[in-house]
Image (cartoon, rainbow, N blue to C red; front, side):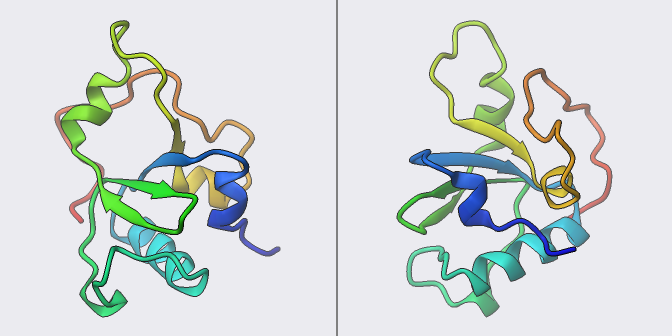
Length: 112
């Protein structure tokens, strides 16, 4: 089964926020992003650094997204947030790959 693409993940949205839960997910995401022509500005893919949240734009630009903003985005006073996506669930074709409620704890699953 082929993995879904980042382009498909964006759909018609201008941007999405993608949660990366660990090294394996980062490797999968970075490989897909590179093969689809996404970029972190002028930084070569060999120099990309892992992050827990990546903002992915329809222009194929990406950026590291502050974890603080990700967590705050689940609060009532935060409106009009982009889709928040669990990248590993998205890759597995899980139907429930969107984050709608806070999931973060003080401990990470694994270090990036």
